[in-house]
Image (cartoon, rainbow, N blue to C red):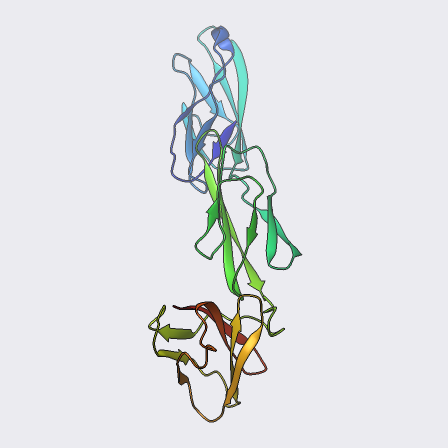
Length: 256
């Protein structure tokens, strides 16, 4: 048997049972390339089922190659070799288990190495990991596997994540809101990206979820200067949220 895989080339010696020779070991070569099958030397004639009369023949995956050899005593023996294609299976499944948590599972669990890339900068070496996405976005999650012979493969799937902001009940977007300086004990300039022509609502929450400041901006305004008055003269960590009825953006800031 011959297995085909990328980036490995071999010449397979066909084992003929004459003179008690053993059949050769399996070989791996580039998928889509040919491999040369060579019968042992020392025989009077060679006949491959394709009609080739040479000692060697080139073969491709998906075929069975049969050779008959004849020695000088006119004894004959037939041997065959089957060429198979082989690539590790890196297929996987995923499911949302609640909120923004996802479970990932590989289809084949017998490989030696599993490397997951969740598409958001995080990874895992577990066979069947779980992962939490923190921002609504479309991610490409990739699994790479390697078997004990160092053969490898990879596959990817697209995951659309929509996270609902618990404060607004709206989908949370990738933050496009900035604050400078942050942290601060003085004025803080907050800027954001405007996505439509509607009004933007700006709110400040403490870490318990209590909103103590709210104002609405119309037109094309995309920045506001906050001071200690807007923060209710408090010190600590706060959440600034900008929303427009379609989505929200939230930024963590510190006032000291």
